[in-house]
Image 1 (cartoon, rainbow, N blue to C red):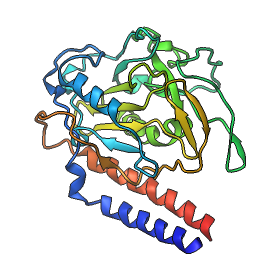
Image 2: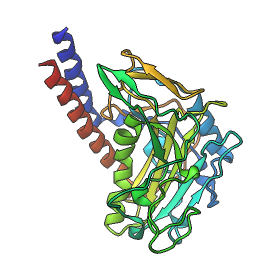
Image 3: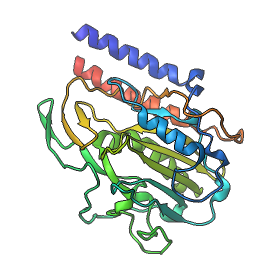
Image 4: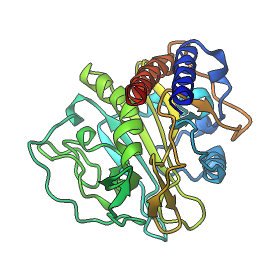
Length: 312
């Protein structure tokens, strides 16, 4: 058994190294919403709707990548739309589910708080349910922010700039039921891209859409993309809403321990099936997807190293 584990880990490490320069990572899902010049935060027009529908149909397979790229990992947002700091919070749908939040961010929107007030809003599919995984009692669900708390300072709950405002913490339009792994591990990688750019004084448009299948109450994933006005930040990914050791009934949000459910970690970013047929044109400067891949490989190495230590 130990030999099998070591072999698997070596394979993961090998794949992680391969990803650093693998051109096949560019064979990714296409989203041609680049023709959309609207500042609306709702992903309901043109191929945005088609991409959403295609992502919603996909089912995560145990052992797969924690995220897949959309449109070759390149954002379809238009940097020229950035005018001033604000967040367009999408309205909740008929089932009270979150939709799409689009943030226009600057360094002024970065913040930290010594202590956060309690969250009282329960998003759809929320159960705050303790589950025993590998002998440990864990809470696999988080109230996940679409736009991170630390990226939303000096903005009101309606997204309007107002100096002195704390970050968006308990806003129903900005909270969904997210797995602890998706929220604290995978999504952090991309949020950190945005956070670093803002710290450097850059301006960023950052959009997150919760993807639901049919009338299910818990998102299947988070469609996340961002672009900075200088083109140095540019990513477009679909983050699976999954948790190692736990499987979920997305219709209700209830989970149960499931040893067969494994997540390969962020070291294996793969392509999805094509979700549209055309793509927009982008500046040759928008190469940040490679920088993102480096971070993912680095995280994957840590993940594999931890597993190796356990095997020994």
